[in-house]
Image 1 (tube, rainbow, N blue to C red):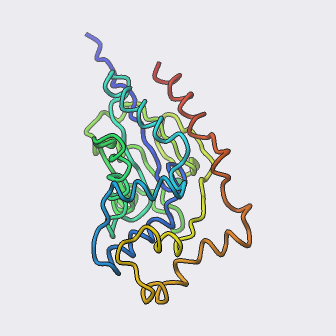
Image 2 (tube, protein in one colour):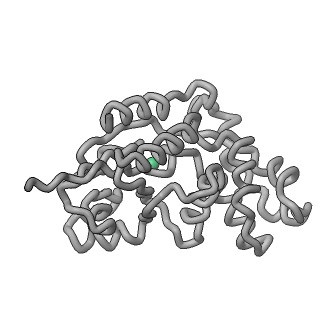
Length: 235
Ligand SMILES: [Mg+2]
């Protein structure tokens, strides 16, 4: 009897693919290192919404991907990021997104440490780029290496051993973090603001001088387009 191959694994990059997380990961660090507490995922979900740091149509993409998995059209949903999880940010970010559905979205989360170790061991090491070898994902899932992988990423040129790459433009929005802290962060003080003003104001200052370097969030359709492609691929 012929063995049926597994349905595809959907693999998602995080930074500038699912959202613009630079400013919000800095805010997360402010919580953990200055305020000495972890924010709640639901409070952060509200911040993600008001700042438009989450990419338009992401919620629809997750909703449909979870349904595809329940119907057996996808084997797994994986977050594959070259970002560091040393501060706990990557884990926290996935919890924030999961709070939309009240259930985890990702079956597996892989961050920079795992990628570096894998690349060193498999001869993919590069001094300036972190290649993403999809065999790492399949090995971690304990799936055959013949399992198809569909990857959505803003840097598809760094992928290795993938089946299908769906490219998106880098999604980048600026947040006025100083204003945000004043209104959304409980326990925020004038002293804290004075100490951290330079770091918090960095992206916003860049935005004010060069707004064209950032995404027009209201017009971004990339995930909507790639969701249509995904539907065709798993139909
Ligand atoms: Mg990226």
